[in-house]
Amino acid sequence: VQLQASGGGLVQAGGSRRLSCSASGRGFINYTVAWFRQAPGKAREFVSAVKYGVGTTYYGDFVKGRFTISRDNDKKMVYLQMNSLQPEDTAVYYCAAASFLHDDYYNTERYYDYWGQGTLVTVSS
Image 1 (cartoon, helix red, strand yellow):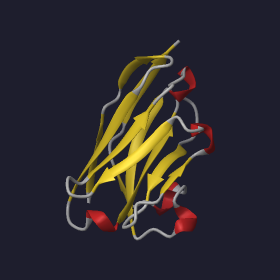
Image 2 (cartoon, helix red, strand yellow; image 1 turned 120 degrees about the vertical axis):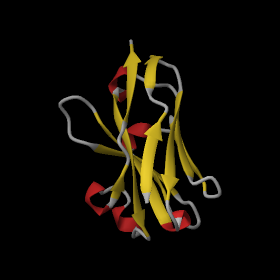
Image 3 (cartoon, helix red, strand yellow; image 1 turned 90 degrees about the horizontal axis):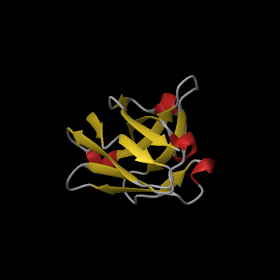
Image 4 (cartoon, one colour; image 1 turned 30 degrees about the vertical axis):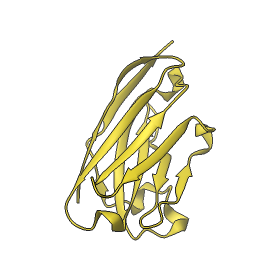
């Protein structure tokens, strides 16, 4: 499967942004899709994931109810709605996919086989 992330840009603190991850290829419904992010000078970290099939969602602790992940299997799309953005949310956001990923590994990047190119979100104070 191939992934393409989009929707990044400049947003003021307290604002919102919706990221999109477009997938191509077969069997999209069988993939857990996640968002990771990497801020300048920091390691990449888990943001959110939506499981294959039933669509169970997971979030990193720092999200604290501000972000919502969703998927549209018919369109092969995953969205990340981000609200109440803060300067510390500034990062390159990547979408990633893994087929039939076990629930224990949804937040572990090495288990994701496919990655999009990343989209930069900059939050100004």
